[in-house]
Length: 219
Image (cartoon, rainbow, N blue to C red):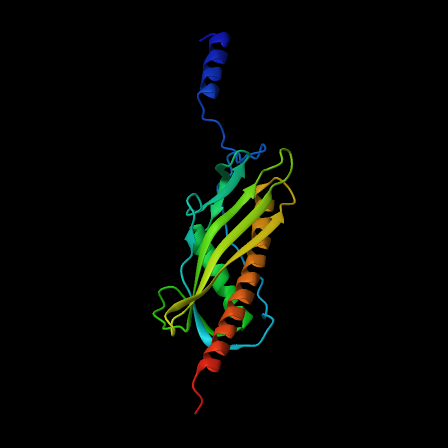
């Protein structure tokens, strides 16, 4: 084979390779193996008195596109995409359930916190829906802003009714347009949301117990 033919065959081989996946903004991963990421809560005692009641956290529900282990991003025009080269250590609903459960337990606000499927007859039940949790590339050329939104409901098992529904929003800006930086910003946003979740759930539960006590007939 002549040198010219050799160069031609090599060029065809290069052109036949699939393009490298990119999240956006030129973020590529090359041939490096996929990284698995987790979210760690900011473990700290919550502000406020301890509530003499138990809480059960149901397994979170996710909006379409978020019920996956892939790390989501949104490009202009509401185009949903995912980062290449990395993913969550499990489905996002599993990852966030673990974070929220740890935050609720470490806060010390409830007598006991159980996860879904624990078979525990808790006093209160907390349901969480993931509405948003992605890196938003609204401005071209800038590092993305992580946006997280939760829709939550707290119910009283003893009274067999929903006490309240509430939304939680949190944001954080990535320090750079790199997956590691984006995940770090996602952890900051998730920790803030978990803190809000603890505070709001404890506030509503304490108010429900106070109302229940006030409505009880005096002996």
